[in-house]
Length: 388
Image (cartoon, rainbow, N blue to C red; front, side, top):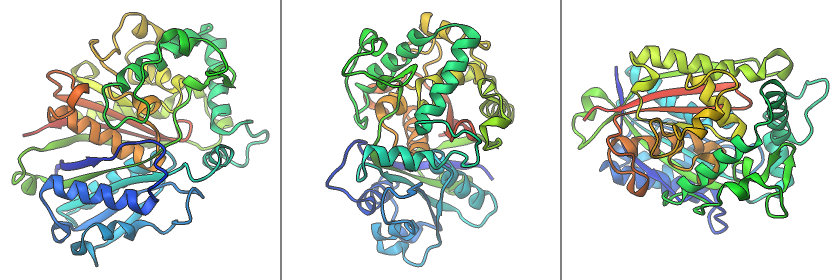
């Protein structure tokens, strides 16, 4: 049974000192219900994407969604966690329930409150998403892991710091047009490509501008089955969705192959019955700029080691032939980890519905979304299209 997005909400991402996790969840859910013209009585189930891991004391947060509307009380609610793909995990679980006939309308919320702990604690918590049994755990958590991947890439294909800086500069320029982005400032290539007091090395060769932001934020979606979706003014269908999980230990994988994302993209495009060139744009998981560069190659935009050409030729720019991260990506929009997967689908639905405001891609009709948990461990690829 086809599943469609028929409503959404997206809160501004950033350091939201006055808001608790509970506030973010409730506000996102309430605004999504309002956008869909629904109340809690219309919802058959609730799914929450939230990593937590120690960011807040609210580990058992699924029923916090119910505070958005009294009609949600007694409705089943489940929290999903799959590292930085927790939001997509919640979305896909809701789709499963609709496709199984157990629900007709679902409310999906992704939320994270990250800034209530120190930067060192953020690094530790996120680092706990990696494999604890590595003989020599990578230093520096995920910045260290992705720095190691970048080092391997440079060793195999030549020094590519300038390509990573172009990705950062592109996404920061795109973020200026995104009203929900945490950082709406065009930093420029030279700043992103230069190590300085304001752009220090975090884990060589990755600079601060190569790393996504620590963020608070939430987003939400209303999903409906095909029959119910006809009653809404617009519908964005999930034409295909694929989840591919790889081994957790780094030692068991060729990290440059980005094989999990590659398999997810291949399977999703096949299930959707389309080719990559049929897509109007893609939103991909740029937790670090090297992840976006590898994503170009995993989805088939460029051969291995040739992703930089897409930047040189302007292909992936917002006005290019295949825009990537017109929203600013995680790099500028922010990365509240439990919210990210939901946010990527909301932004893509906005684009397809012609409601993406200043970041609108003209004539967008088909979208690809890639959300990743860990270092290419949990990989989710969705193909979206406006069906009405």
